[in-house]
Length: 505
Image (cartoon, rainbow, N blue to C red; front, side, top):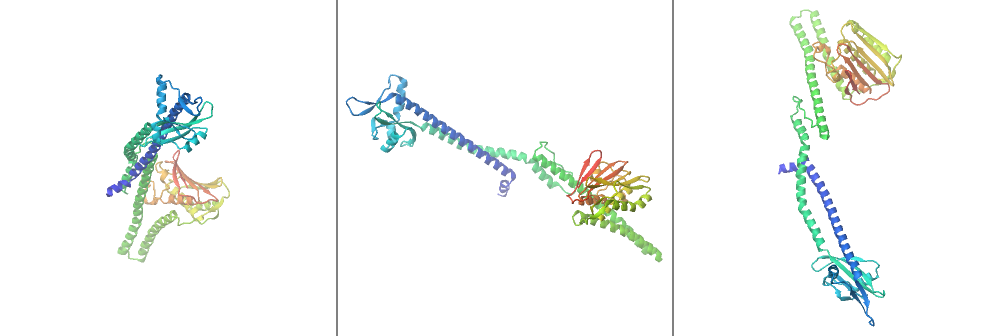
């Protein structure tokens, strides 16, 4: 019972039932249309036959007056020796009624068939005689067989008398044909409904196969099994779009899970190393230190490592708060030339210590706008810090500032080792670190949060950031910030031609 309820509530059953219902309604409409056309054609044919009989009747019936007599009476002029006229007379007389102006039937011109249908009342006769057009009506005999009747009149030659004349035709054959059509439709309808439902069930099942594959794939997906993909049917329909969207979602999930897994590894390493060092230093000092100076050195070294731990925790907390909307920009009127120049000056000493040439080249004297000073300084600091880390000694770093329409344009360019093309579209993702080289995976290279901060800051200001890089020749970050803009939605990374990557914010 439960399984039947499950089938009855399934999408496959619903679609099949809807398909069957719509097709059944369409079929009923077609059947009714055909039946109506058939009934109309049969009625028109019967009327034509009766009209032809009426024309023959008028040609062969006279209302004559006997000389010296006051009475008029109908006289037929059929040639009984002619088979056609004999047949015509028999057909007309089979359903015939003739009556005078008072509604009194003429006995020899009242057929038994018409008499069984019921002779018309004097009032009906007078109404027909007074009418200038034929009256059509239907009658049934005692057995219920239908007849189509045409009622009109004929006049005497001197036009002084009118006689009521009614002729008709049995509609039994036409009614039988309509009944056969009805029975045939009623007999075929259940078979058609069953066939429609089975056809709908089969084709719906085939159409929903990708959906079932998606459901089955979703059941097997877990954090350790995100490599599963559903093959596309290559039909270009909505289900193919659903399959492609699902595969793209799984791919994004796989990337995010890998990033989170890598982040967990990095965080564990980053936190474990200073904790181990601090613990080791304190244990050594506890066991071997004999003087206050030795204790002091151990405490100073431990504090430095604790400060590194604090920086890591603060960075993670700040980025989490920023991306969940807990950090609100504190915009104020700023001159980006002044702010950028101050940050570049702060990095001159680290750049000189790394034997790098750091320059600031403003293209405008002033670049006023509404910005958050703290976040803009953090953005520039992260970019310059990365440039110094990944630029070999003897290289150069250049920061330029200009205008692009109503946007402030900041470009940070270095001559460092560059970013491989396969990593370029992912560098703005949280916790992402370019790996594969030993020097790139060292602890000093950080947790991969710097560019995530840059991405969020630019996004929060409603701007765009794009990265261009060539392996072994350096990297360039171009930032556009609306000077009077609003924040926008979550950015997305787009790969640009010629090894460029852009994150639209």
